[in-house]
Length: 191
Image (tube, rainbow, N blue to C red):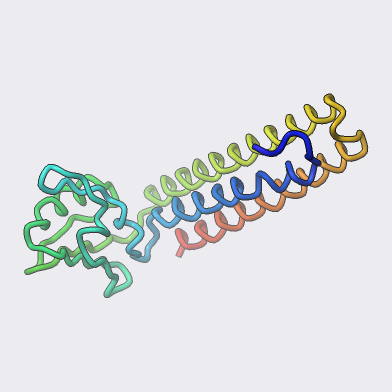
């Protein structure tokens, strides 16, 4: 991970920041895929479409827009993609049936039911917990490395405890970001 000879606790703590940022990016992507009462292209852009024996994300085969609050319009680059797109959309489970309209496919999202909202809240909680577990795993890895360097005599004892404090501050900062993303999506689901 780092140059083992010239190392201090700050290098170890800073070394996990890119990984923690990836956790936030993951959480942002995953929450954008959770349906709310408002349609967004992110609900379908990563749907895998089987086209001519190959698999492509929908965003590589079409333009995706939201002409209305609860409608997604998919305009394939080529008419021959339509059948595969419709088949893939029918398997998504977002609660809308694709309708072919001339050269486009329309998805009109139904209003959210209470039961469906509960399922979304549960899915959101699951994504939040996955993200928090990953943050904990990175914290534990960094702390183990700090302790190892201390045992080897490469980090002083007071630096070991400073490292632990900084590590916890960093973890708290990223957990707060996860919480904020969750709260924002929670509000969107309730709208």
